[in-house]
Structure formats: C-alpha cells, structure tokens
Length: 253
Ligand code: XBP
Ligand code: MG
Image (cartoon, rainbow, N blue to C red; front, side):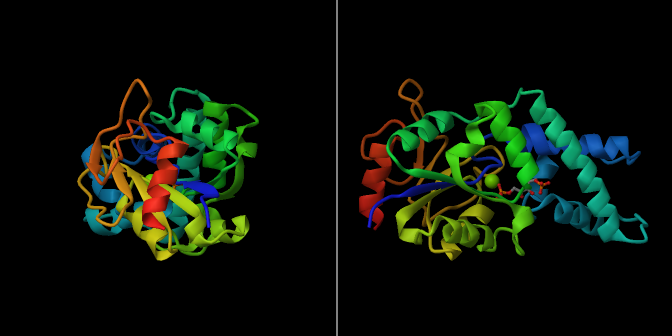
C-alpha cells in the first residue's frame, strides 16, 4: 500500500475560520435577531466542544442561560443557524480570511505528485465552497476528489461518519490516507474510522491532547517559516511536504 490521498478538515485546519468566520457570524446573527447574546472568544473555545452550529446554539440555550423561553428550540436553532450561515458566506465573500500557513503549498504539491485531495468537515457544503472559492479561486473545488460535509451525514464528529463517507467515495482504505485535523473531536472521529492524523493546533485547540497522532504541529510550515513540533518526530524537516508525509507514512504503516 502507498499514500494515495490527503483528507483535510476545514474549520481551524485549513483556515482559522472558527475565530474569524464562525464566531463573528454567530454574533452577527444574534445581534440581527435582537438577542442580547455576545459570545466571547473564551466562551467559544468551550462551546466548540459541541460540534455543529445548530447543536452548539441548543447547547448554549440549555446549559448557559437561566431564563430563555422558546416554544420550539429545534426550530429556533435551525432558523438562527440559517441566518448565521448567510452571514458566514457573506464574510467569506469579502475575501479577508486567509488559509493557514502551508495549506495552499501542500495542496499544490499533492496535486503535482498525483496524491488526491479530499475534505471531511462538520460545517455545511455551502460554507466550504465559499471558503475554497474565495481563497483559491473559482475552479479550486475541482482540486478535491470528494467533499464530505456535515449536512451529508447522520452523526457529526467525534462520530466517524464523515470520514467513512469520504473513504467510501474515494474507494480507498484508511491505510492509504492521512488526515489533517486541528481538534480532538476531529482526531477522535478520524481514529474511529481507522485513519491516522497530522494535527495542526490553533488557539482553540492547543490545550488538547493528541497522544496517538502521527505528529502535532503549530502549523504546516513553509521553507521560510518552519513549523514548531509539539509532539512527535519531524525527521529533520521544517515544513510538511509530500516527502515528509511519505516518511511519516512509512513509519506508521
Ligand atoms: C467544525 C464545527 C462546525 C463549525 C461551525 O468542526 O464544529 O460546527 O464550528 O459550522 P470540525 P456550522 O472542524 O471538527 O469539522 O455552524 O456550519 O456547523
Ligand atoms: Mg476543525
């Protein structure tokens, strides 16, 4: 067996969209709806333990508010979340949210080396499309053999569903892929699907433990901007290249 595909999480992994996209969009939707809620960055770190925006809103109402009366919480969360999605897409269309260090380079290297790219995310397809087309151009969606999104599967991460969906569509076994994740929920989901992960943490996930990851880094790095290793062996490499991933692959499979 050999390395055939790289499967990327989106939020927090290919871009810092949690902080600069989703959190901003949640707060805009609250304000627009006349709610006096304003999630801080610290609160959002806690709320991120619940994946999926609708479930996160419900979790907030049920666990953080003393008095909030609503007849149908599911309907309320669904409508508020739709508004949040509209604000999120609007933000992406402004084109101010960049990809994380090394992401575009690694996408390009993978394509040059005949290694497939795929996406496995909790957010919805419309949000992924908005991020990818606004950062990489209108034809960049075609770089990905499969895009698995939260609105296509039953159970969200940390359940393995989205990774199983992507593997199924790729027609590959877990041993032919490497996953890129930023969070424990994502890592657990990929491990349950039999996949190995490279973790690039961010300010919302740097406190989490990823003991059985292939390697844990602060970002993917560039030749002129090396990564820092948090856990694992970097074999002397300064950035995540296809050569480096092949070395990691040999070590783990
Ligand atoms: C991402 C999520 C999503 C986003 C918000 O997790 O949990 O809920 O926070 O997007 P991961 P939506 O990066 O592990 O896939 O509001 O569209 O759910
Ligand atoms: Mg993530």
